[in-house]
Amino acid sequence: METRRALAIPHPLGGERPLFHSPFPIPHSRPRTGFTLIELLVVVAIVGVLALALTLSVANSSERRLEGAAERFAALVAHACEQSELRGREIGIAISPGGYAFLRLDREGWRPFTGEDALRRRDWPQGTRPTLAREGRPLDLVPGEGDEVPQLVCFASGELTPFALDLALGDSRAHYRIEAQGEAVPSMTRVDAGP
Image (cartoon, rainbow, N blue to C red; front, side):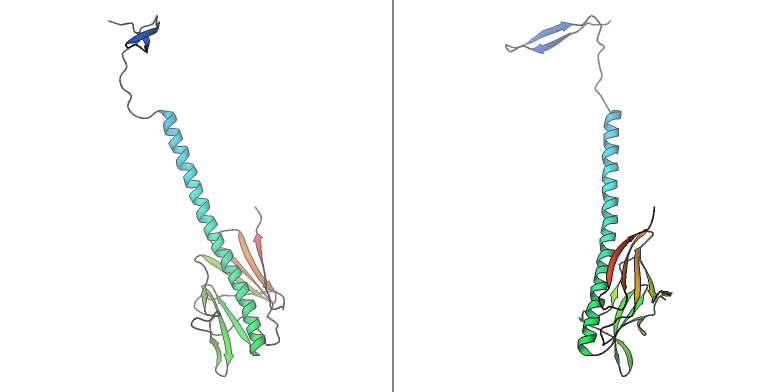
C-alpha cells in the first residue's frame, strides 16, 4: 500500500507543520550507500591536479640543479683563470661525462687540486649529458678519464682555451651553454631547442 506523505517543516512551538501535500506518492527511500558520479569525478580531478603539480615540481627541481651546476662551472673556471694569472702558473680543466677537475701543472705533470680547495673535483648532477667543443671541434668525453690531461687551460697570461660546453639533462631539449672565446670569464646561456 502506498502512503502519501506531506512534506513538513518544524513548528516553533513543537511538532511539524505540513508545507504542502504531495499529490504523488513518495516511496520509502533507503539510506544512500556508495559515491555519486560527481563525487568520483571531483576526486579524480583533484588527484590529476596533484600529479601534475608534482611532475612540474620534479622537472623544475632537476632544471634548477642543472642551471646551478652550469653557473658553478662558469664561476669556477673564471676563478681558476684568475688564480692562474695571480700565481703565474697554468691551471688545466679536465672534463668527463661524470664531472670535472681542475689541475695544476708542476714538475711531474698535471696534478688535481684536492681537499677543501675551491678547485677540487666536482660531479655533474645525475643524468647530465656534457658535450664539449674546443676551438669549434667536438671532443669525445670518455668515462673514467679526463683527470690526467686537461682539455682546457687557463694560461698565466690571463687567456683561456676557446671552448663551448653544453650541459643537458636526460632527454630535455633545453640545455645550458658555457663558452669562452679566449677571454678568462666564460659566458653562460640557456639554449632552447626548437619544438
